Image 1 (cartoon, rainbow, N blue to C red):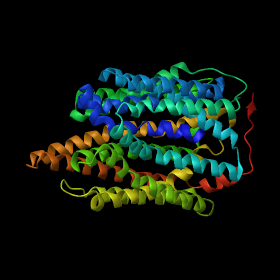
Image 2: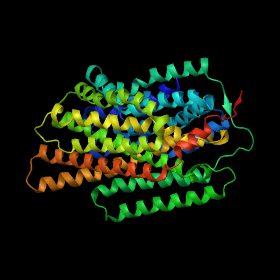
Image 3: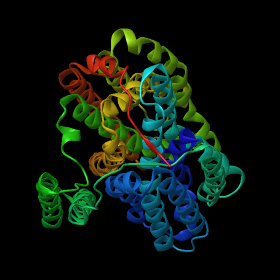
Image 4: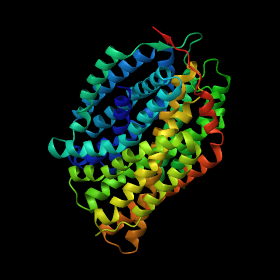
Length: 466
């Protein structure tokens, strides 16, 4: 049930990607509005996750999970019935709000249900595999629904997931919450939410030029608000993000790697869908199925990564994995306007999927190892928030890179198909660089990660069950 929850919140960041061409035509969306259909969900999700984690800790994880699932289903219904671009974007934002309550509650339940030992490793391996394949599953499912039903079912299908999740929670989940001092960091919430929103909006404005005054203003303002947020957290009695969570070098490294993986997943899958449908001319169904090469490669490699983790340690896996995935992204940079899926895309997706498997298996376990019961919700929220905010910022940056590459190619006299293909190639190169950065982070910041996990094997996290 918890794995299902993670699948829902991850796939919803990508499931509409396949449907966007049809939704854009029906609702007459501009290109900017089209991007905000994705950004509204990811931004609301990532910005409010920390608050959602604290609510789950204090209010009760089962209760938060159920309210989040119910609200997520209702917002999905609204989006599926939307009659305008404004409605669709608002519904996607509301989905993100409830996902921010749902996701940390689910991961916190996993953390306190499996506090230590082999069962914890197995549980996180399953959870990580679902998280790593969710984006690609969203693409495939979106293709099936768009092809045989309507793009609106990419949102309406969440009602089914919500019902299954609610019934499962009622039957098998016990309530857990922290005891002692409670309080909500309202000022911290405002600072981090406004800061992230300003930062993402600044990246969006930068599509017209990095030196535009508005873009510089929003980027600078966003960074300033995030600095204010850190100052608030250092002094708050009940901080939204206890800084002790990120002061640990190994854990901070895991969060940064999660952010880079989020940027790659959300950014590359969008432009992959555009290339498959717009340039190669595949139907939504075939485009979704074509993306499964990455999913199957991840699923096949994940058990191998799980077996290697105890002997090789997370640092080796999380350094090698991004480098392998970067090689796959470099493969994709050689796409052409008149190329084929099998020669230019398939092999690259397989290599990316293999590399990602070596990251997703250990990353969440490393990020949460040694976290106290009182901080389980906040730390779980930060794991998800890092991926969503990384994806949100990454999407904005990659879009800027794409537009610049298309403009340069067009100026050189290339046709429309050649220009946009050059744009997609530039995005894939940027994701390869991002993955290489993740490998550097793993090599330098995850020293001692294996020892930390080993030392925690015998430890247990006490939980209040009510």
